Image 1 (spheres, rainbow over the protein chains, first blue to last red):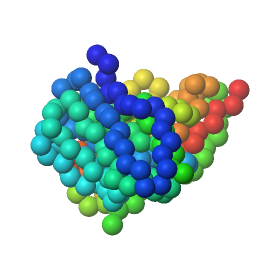
Image 2 (cartoon, each protein chain N blue to C red):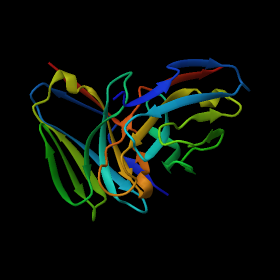
Image 3 (cartoon, chains in turn blue, brown):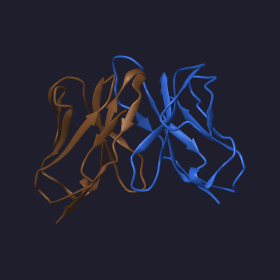
Image 4 (cartoon, rainbow over the protein chains, first blue to last red):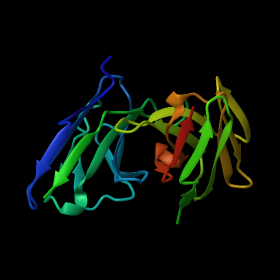
Length: 115
Length: 109
């Protein structure tokens, strides 16, 4: 299993540009989520999904969109990049949204800089 | 609202024992998780407590008191490789994880 994969690893954008961060998992996990981590900070939840076709907002959803058309993929779209979105973005997945496994598996992260 | 508090930094020497505390305020509490993150890396799961008491996994143990809204991570027989940031995270409904700001542990020889 590849686990949770994210692309790209690094990205530089100009203010106003849009882009999509890709996330995929091959563990058949129901739950997927996106976090951002700013220097010296914890992870803040952006959006999450409890299954294909179902998404919801986290703590800091503004400026981001998500969709979940398949169990495997959970892309994060930046609509119009702003310097405040410079951060490291982590995608995570876990087996079940209720009961059972509690471990979230994280991808390697995407380091985004907005100029 | 919701908040988690943990110390920003802890230092210790190899072979020692260190405890990292976490206090939280949140609604819809399901459990408390702990994650480790090395510089430049992704967070990795260490432990999860849904019920009061101590959970032991090798050199690491985690404790939860729901009535006190308090938990801690205990690291024994510290090794240099344990130098990392440690995050407590409250699990709310639908597996929403809300993370603390992290405790940076530095282990010295």
